[in-house]
Image (spheres, rainbow, N blue to C red):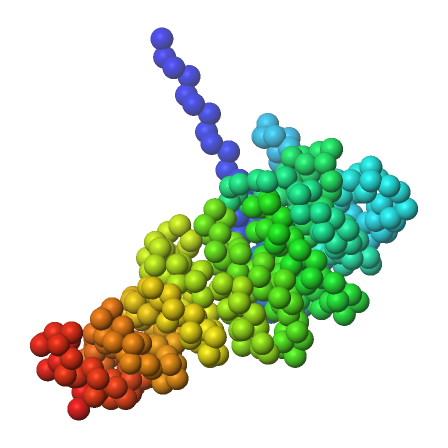
Length: 440
């Protein structure tokens, strides 16, 4: 019995296919360049990936392209083709939310009690999960971001209110709301703020209208929830990038202590640790922040990170975390308290010297600069002997000979070797093959 021939595959018309996703368009929209894309794909290209040009023509996108024109004719053609070829039809896209609806949700929450507040958070989470367009609408709606910040602030002092949660998976605002049903809404509001991916303009607006955002996020860093602390670090990094440098010098001790605790917590996701290192590097150059960080135990946390994972491990993000730790140590060694803590740590000098020969040129330069600060300003006889005993001098000689890290680290290494040649060159602790290569 002959088999009936298999039906020929349906050929999809080329103009039904999105140039980005290479799939049939569900919601076709047209840019000013004349090219049509699926809405989700082009919004991801423009808003999530940050591109400013048309993917096909490479022409720059105008301000009108932030709201591309729906191509209803093409959509009807696609629906008719699906029906003619027994292909499952795509549902009609839901109309985008407008600012009035968002304002009504926020207003109802402000006038109501706890149940209304949680219901509003659920509505906002549903709205932003639908599309990037809705997410931008919520971000731009008057009072919406400020309402979410106020919810977090209201509960920020109650550090036990957020449920402990582990894991490093980035959950959506809707996921968090589902998991926190019936509990206080502060972690849900925090998750929505994180999901909004607030722009620098929005953050500046919030910071100008209220000085509490950074302090509120500092309180979040004390919550027991790993997820909340990770979201808090994301928002804190973005907020500090929008803060004027002159205001960074007034960072509170509570903020810096919270950041140091996150950097030192090995139970947190690697992303949270790296975010904390970014924030620490942002804060340390200003005012007395270096001293505050040293008093909060930052030097010990950074050295431990270099020892455990910073030079190639994966638990806290590998070499990139090590580079950030080296940069932060360099900043801390700009003050006497930081240098004292580095020297006092049993493995401090050894860890920084090892990082100087294992990291990228940027990390190497920071590590060498930290060692240079110690050699110039804290070079007691005991410190010089320790630098010799733990291999710092040997690694400086390697940097001078190899020169792979760049000219500036090489020159600083040579300067340190010449600065203390009287102590180091003739020492019996220095191997003969190293002593012969000692610079004159």
